[in-house]
Image (cartoon, rainbow, N blue to C red; front, side, top):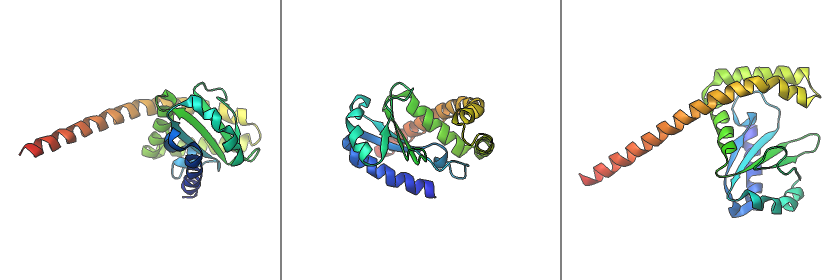
Length: 182
């Protein structure tokens, strides 16, 4: 998967720049969902310890081709774009406890686990890209309603999935402890 390889290459560069400030790096956006029709832009979400320290890395990001955009309309985020008018990468940095972090992960994982929804979403995106090839605002507005619907379903699904995983993990720990008494 080309998107995965491009993500991994860029994640390695980001890890070198931000070092121990990064907790984890997620591949998000359409290229993170195998088979989903997508523009060839890699969306990356590093999760960091302290979002307020990130601006100090702007010069290092410029050196590897990124344009720092600050919050870019979303409080609690630091956003960077690479590639100018022919963007290749978007970096969305969030702090560990940010609810936005979970929203991105839930959306991605929901599409991965629900391929029919992903296909419909991809078809809409493709139609909008053809209809509005040079009007990004119209493209975004055209997919807005479906994105909201998917986000709502994804939040519910993710919450249940997360709770179920926690229950399974707690059960496995219990079984392990019980086995150690035998």
